Length: 140
Image 1 (tube, one colour):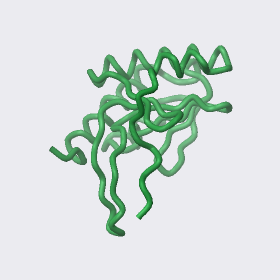
Image 2 (cartoon, rainbow, N blue to C red):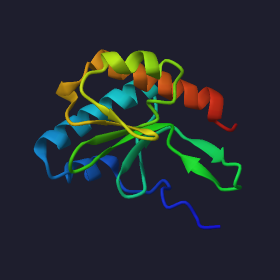
Image 3 (spheres, rainbow, N blue to C red):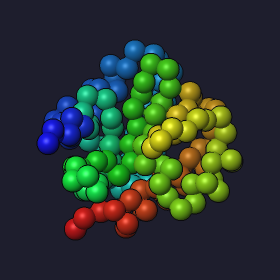
């Protein structure tokens, strides 16, 4: 079975974020870094070449595929910020309508800029997503 490509690396998070080309996306990324660090109580780790993650858990699918993933995290992409783990919590459906301008994918939440969303709602989604993943999916 193929090895999961998205694994923790030794790349310094601040170095990665400092290299984000778009100044607004770079500033939002540093703000997200502080917000997620504060809420999770975890230090950020680079997962693969472009995901900044906090905490972690082990997963195993029915197919037998298994691996490790960040509990919550984000990736500053060219067109948006992709946020991971925020839609897993039981309150996500209740919180999403109050978030502001966003899109959702299978397991991601996409926002263009932090100023487009309510930071209080975003903080609650980070907290709820992180707590859910760590309580429900985390392997001791």
